[in-house]
Length: 183
Image (cartoon, rainbow, N blue to C red; front, side):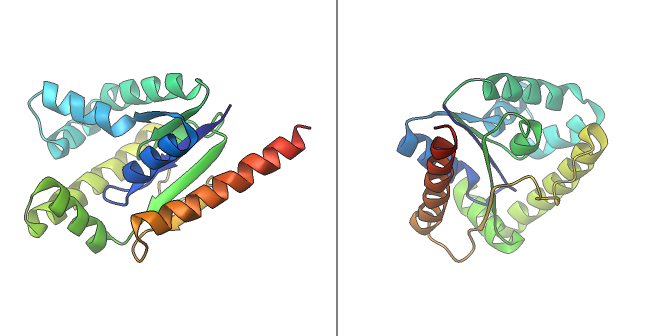
């Protein structure tokens, strides 16, 4: 039984790595971001518009976090989301923070979403600024405080495979240490 939380800013590679972790360890994958995008679509809003609306309506974040926390109590799961590791810090067994500098993340987002760089940059800065404000105001969580994480990986100079090799090695060591401690 293992619960892994993967957090990090948009475009860092957290979703890619969380899915690879789920595949490698036969875990269930869950994305908090997919719920946020689902809510945005259902309201006919962009992610940025919903982020701004969420500053005035805490029920949006609270619903996502309620679902995330509920899922985190399940066994053999990988949870992926900006705040997931903080929200589940008491029950997640292993917490990973994936990051990269803003310009690299924006290049990835622009390519992924088929947007011009300047538009992706503007949207990302707005999204991160609004999210940081909400995280501090609603939860008292400072997303720049990474002290809760077991592993922090900067993906800026690593390939997807190199990043996963680091993550897998760390998870394997954690699982082996935990197994030894339980016997």
